[in-house]
Each structure stands twice: as C-alpha cells, then as structure tokens.
Amino acid sequence: PEVLRGLLQVYMKDGVVELPGLRDKLPPEHGLAGRTPLEIMAASSEKRMAEGFTNRFSIIGSGTSWHATLLAEYLIEYMARIPVEAHYASEFRYHEPSLQTGDVVFVVSMSGETADAVESLRQITKSALGKNVLKIAVVNSSSSTLAEESDLVINVQAGAEVGVASTKGFSATGFVFELLSLALADECGTITDAERSIFVKRLHELPEGMQEVLDREAKPLMQTSTDNPIGIGECPLWDIGCQNVLAQNFIFLGRGCSFPVALEGAMKCKELAYIHAEGYPAAEMKHGPIALIDEFMPVVVVCPMADATYEKIKSNIEEVKARNGATIAITEKYNDELEQLCEYVIGLPETHEYLMPILAMVPLQLLAYMMGILRNNTVDHPRGLVKSISVK
Ligand code: G6P
Image (tube, rainbow, N blue to C red; front, side):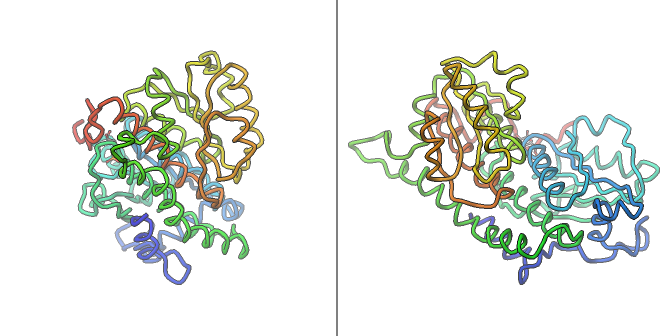
C-alpha cells in the first residue's frame, strides 16, 4: 500500500498523470526528435491509425516482469485502443524484430539488469531503424543498464524487495501501467469524463483496499496466541493453505486482465510452495487441463464481478465442480452466488474492473507464501532461484 501511495503522490498531479519525461521533446540526435514520448505513443492509437499511422507497442520482460507486461497489454489496449504485443525477453532477443519508424518498445525489468532484457534492448538499438524507435525502460533502479540505454526511464519506485520471488515489483509495475494507460487514454481521447472520474477515484482508493486485504489475511496470523499457535481460523487464506498444502498440483484460472494474475499466481505457487501449478485463461481449460481435474486438484479462479466475463467464468467453475475439483474463488466481498458455488471464497473490496488485478494478486501471493511456510520452505530464498539473471 505504501508503494502505491508513493506512486500516486509522485506521478499524479491534480488528477493528471505526470510521469517524468512524458511531455519533454526528444533530443535532436534521436530519430523522432522534436516530438514528446506521449505524442509518439498516442500516434499508435486506433483513432490516429485512421489518419495513416500504423505504429505499435512491444512490451518485453522476463519472469514476473513478463506477467506485468501481459497485464500492460490488456490495460493499454482496453483504455487507449493501442495495439500492443507482449514478448518474453528471452524469445525477443533471438528473433529479427520487424520495426517501423515510430514504434514504441517498453523493456520491463525490476533489476534493469536481466541479460535477456538488456540484449533485447540492444538488439533494437543496433537495428537499422533503432534510432527511430522510442525505447522506454520500466525499472526499479534508475542507475541500471536498461535505464542508461533507454530514451525514457519510468521508475516503479517499489523500494528494496527482500524476497527473491518478486511480489511488490508486480504490484508497482502493474500500477505504473495503470497510470500510463490513463495518460494515454487522455491523450488519445478514448475515455469520457465520467469514466475518467470513476477510474481516478478508484485509483486513489486502491492502497486502502490493498491494506484491507493484508489486515484481514496477514495480520491475524502474526498475532497467534498460545491457545492457537498456528492460527487456525484466524484468516481464510491460512485455512485454505492448511487444507491444500499437500496438493501436488494447482490450476489458476482467469480471463481478460485477470489472466496475467492467474499466471503470476501459478508462478508464485511454484516458486514459494514448490507445488506444480498451471495458469490458464479460464475458457481454454476445456482444451486440455480439464482432463486433469478431480477431487485432488484445487482450482483457484480469479473472477471479479466487475469483470466483463464474470458470467462466463461462472460456467467454468461449474465445469470444475462437475469433476469434483475444489474451487477457490477470488472475487468481491459478499458475493453470495460464489459463496454457494465454491469451496472457498476470498472477498476483495470493490474496485474498477481494470484495477482489480492489482488487488487480486495480493491473496495469491499470500497463499503461496503461507503454503511455503507450512511446507517449511525457505520462502525468501527459494531453491534454484536468484533475484536477477544477469548472465547470458
Ligand atoms: C528472476 C527472479 C524473478 C524475476 C525475474 C525477472 O528469475 O527470480 O523473480 O521476476 O528474474 O527479473 P527482472 O529484474 O528482470 O524483473
């Protein structure tokens, strides 16, 4: 919550998004000199494309940062109607990028040093059109290699992250892309005043919403008593963790902008609890993973009522139930319908559909952490993982 509050304070002035450098003209040596990053980015919108522009956004990252790039793809396309493609840095760096003048490339990396991300950026810089592409680093360190070699740096200001598996990094990067999407929607004229004021109100409520989830799900555990040393019944997530800690597999489902959350939830489950987990777009379940569902398969479904596909995802839950799978729903508080339908429900405060991923991520991070603790894992330093992979 403090990180989100800090970002609002630094990057939002009188209700307008003010990311550093967004409105400054690029220097004369740049192929797109004389225009501001915001103008260049907005030139890719559907509206401007009708005027003859065909430029695109590519967003590149690794690990958790890749999941943040996928979330960014949904947010920017929904809010600003700009075509975006998310890429794994490890794949991008080995393919011949088909760049055009005016393309915008974001390289997302908390350390700013991940070798695949750095090489992806260099690949663009050295290509024939490299000078005519806007290169933006989204990092948690302004002195990193990526920051130094990009045209524009957006610092997600997440502060130091103790755990090797990224958590704050995802929330902070996701939140920065929420802000950027709003700036782009303003510039592209794709948001009405009424939609804007609801979104801005919800943005400001988000830190408090996140705090509410943490207070309910994490705080009681730290205050366990001698009568109840492991805190049974203290918070719903801990009980879910205790019930499912011996599971050998998990499935995480989500649709739309909840899909990247499902992917990241599955990754946290692997990293912290050492339990195999698959993240899937909910409706794709019937094309394969459904064959795995039985009474031993817990299925976490990220299904906010605010989501445009909420009704559809309910039928995916029915399909899991028909196969005796246990469903754990992440949705808004007081969702009676899902309380009836699912084994477990984690209720979140209400927010805007596009902001829900930031809130929904928190219980999934905590669940993985709790199962890691229950399995006696070294959650801050999971086996085989390192904070940043800067070797080639
Ligand atoms: C490592 C870490 C992950 C992280 C990934 C990308 O694999 O264990 O937690 O998401 O690197 O790191 P970056 O610094 O590029 O965001």
